[in-house]
Each structure stands twice: as C-alpha cells, then as structure tokens.
Image 1 (cartoon, rainbow, N blue to C red):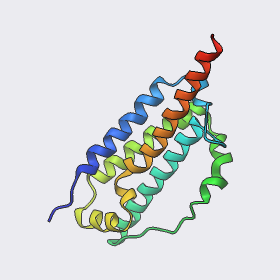
Image 2: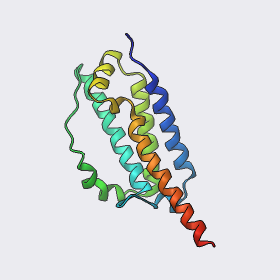
Image 3: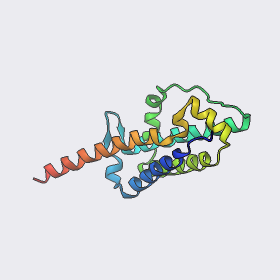
Length: 155
C-alpha cells in the first residue's frame, strides 16, 4: 500500500503560513515575546533549525539506504536560544522560510521506501507541519495579546 502523501499539502500549507507571517511582520513584531524567554524571531530561527535537522536526517537516510537519525537532546533548545537570539530578526524569518521550503521539496521527492521508514519512527520528520504549526499558533497567540495591549494603551 502506498504511503499517504497528505503530508505534502500539510507541509506546504505550514510553509506558506510561515512565508505569509514573515512577509507581514514589522521589525517590532519580530521582537515581541513568545512565552517566557523567546521572541517571534527566536521561534522562527528555532523552526529553521529543526527543519534543517529533518533535512539532515533525510540526507543521511538516503545516503545510507536505511534510517539514520542521530540522537539529539531536546534540551538543546535551551542551550541554543541565546545563539538564535543573536540572529537578526529579519534573517531569522528568511531562514525559517528557506529551511521549510528546502525540507518540503526534499520530502516531496524522497524515495517512498525510505520515507515510510522515517515516518514509522519519527512522524514529525515527515509531517513538518506538526512542529511548525505548534510554534506558529504560539506566535499568533502572542501577537494577538500584543495587539490587545496596544489597543488598551490607546484608550
């Protein structure tokens, strides 16, 4: 049975969501907080990092003809946050769009047999929209709060 390829549309939709968000954000909005220690730009850079990691897993898997997924500790997110914060906000947005687009293209043309192996072990490597949309929802919620705050300040 052929693999369900609905991930292609899901990933493209999340990439388009990133692209649209980055295109409309002001420099101030890119610096707005998302949660306790992150900003919109840091969140975008984080997404770029994890999309690039997914691309790396796909490259290694295809080169070796079997699933290769180097272990990575999710606490890495805490360690790299200061490095991500050093990326200029506009550049973080560009990197997020670029990485999402690259991994989407790679997944669309990835060998079916290997794609199924990756999917079975780590669905989020294939359905990148799962990770992206979590963060995009958090950005949207944070920006909505900021707009509400700005509107209250104007009263």
